[in-house]
Length: 560
Image (cartoon, rainbow, N blue to C red):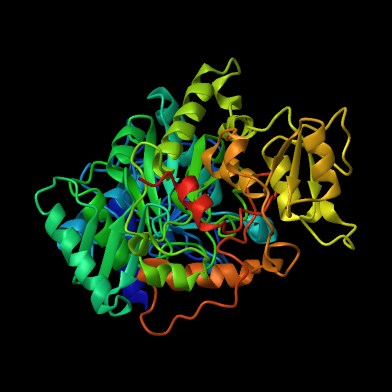
């Protein structure tokens, strides 16, 4: 053990740019000056008071500044930092650095990641000069232990997984990153993969008839520069990219620093990045389930990005419990029949329908319009840069029904008194509408009817008010605009969509995780469902739209 410690101490000394000094234990660092006060290795002794070392980063379990071992308690709940992302423009990591999800033992990738780790340690040492640091006193150590429960440490999973970054150091790096981004007039955009940018299923989950259709599509796309359908033989997957994905990424990278965040594993994330970004120019980082701080949730701490400059595009809100206000939730992309069956949707898959989303009016075209608008508003804001927040501007853009006063009828059981918690009610408020408990001909502008022929509906029609089905709210939510009411006449809702139990957050998370990276062939069964969507929409906590009838779903997707 002493030999291992000595070896690690040499590595720390070499990589942090400081001389090797044996660690004496819990006390101060030993005095390495000569008896006569002469210089030691070019460094002049000083009697200036020494500061306590706050251990900004650890390499191989030792502080990169002072060489102290990391307390055992610090190893609990360590989040993971995906490698390969420069911390600041002037002191960025080597340009060739890549995510550990793509290394797979490759020596070049390991060297790049080690170089990035060395760069992080160099910056930590520069911010906290080793020549002025000493080991903490016993009293200071006790204070650190008392604060340990509030400290979050970030672990850099490079090739050997030895670098850990303390919370204070992570905050320092975030500030540097924000300065770099804002100086380049860029924000951060975190992108989900499955059901957001693409749809993947295992080869055995495709029947022979469907396989024949897919091979025909492959032949049609053979000569195209940007293919949308792939047979990933190494992963045993069929993967279909969402239409407009290449155009979306090319346009978004001009305004945002792009990151992938998937609940799939590293191999899957690397394979998809190779499709979307073969030249490694689009994405600053790729985070897989192996890198995440949780197996069932996503968090921006793993990407070391600031909340106020970050937007998220994902199909599931429940995986972002701390960042719902940053989220642009999209409708799940179900190209393959098995994918639609996993989530128990009421619609056929796009392959079964023989169509696909439109390039000009589909989901990703809408997302590009929204994120571009947020970017424009952010940099046109009169507030100081450090006080601007993308969440404020996203909320303002979301309020597409501002000025509308909505009365509901037959949208939930009449015996229910706490209708404020109803997802459809919260959805309307999320979109900026005012929700009224009763019909008021002087105030009400819209009546949302869960069934035709109700008393409130008849009164509204007589008064010339707009009467629509709940699907109108869903369409406004996904399109981020006030949709024409004419296409959403009231229809009778089936009992499963009016007050019946919906998929719980836990059940939906189980379905999402089971389907990530194509899912587990032959072993995944979705729970009994009440619709494709059961999350909550946006900052108002409104539930995402339930699955709509086929005609509305096609209209909502902007299918060609």
